[in-house]
Image (cartoon, rainbow, N blue to C red; front, top):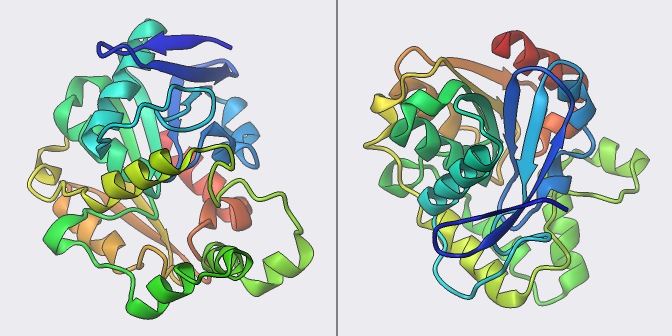
Length: 257
């Protein structure tokens, strides 16, 4: 398993597949690279795809210290530098979209095209999930809370015909401290002031029925990033890229080309 080491000494596990121009795929909060497993082949055919395990997940180190989305973006650069990649396309979903915002805003020379999926600008301008959703995820019954999360990710029809395993509901091997640190990183995200400085061509994608990260965040992002395109996928929930793969992957590939 190859690793890149950050300036603060954290080892980051990364994975490279396919050939062609580099494409970085960034997963959601408290998830490792396996988030992309169900759809990664769609992109491997045209691109050299690069994933990594965020600090706190997968095979990467898991220091018990504050994490931030901006810090995760710096970790992405560590992996790209290790691979000798100067510029890449970047596709981030959920918290990965928050990380991608910092990458594109803070390092415009490194990002040639940007896709932000089911993401949010965060901070005072971001639209938060409502209290009913929060309560469903905070149930003391862990099985019930996991079922609530699955129902936020996928439609009932999908869940009835796809028994899993599901790679979008968290890395099961994460220690509790890393889960808390990831939650704090995502909750603390606020890129509103930085978004207008993004120069990469940008596509914002979101499911119309996403209440986990409310769909109202998509037009906010698209309106804040100069020239951004907005595409809403009808009927999709948070994991639009997996359940609505037949729509979402061609949409993103067309944009990246």
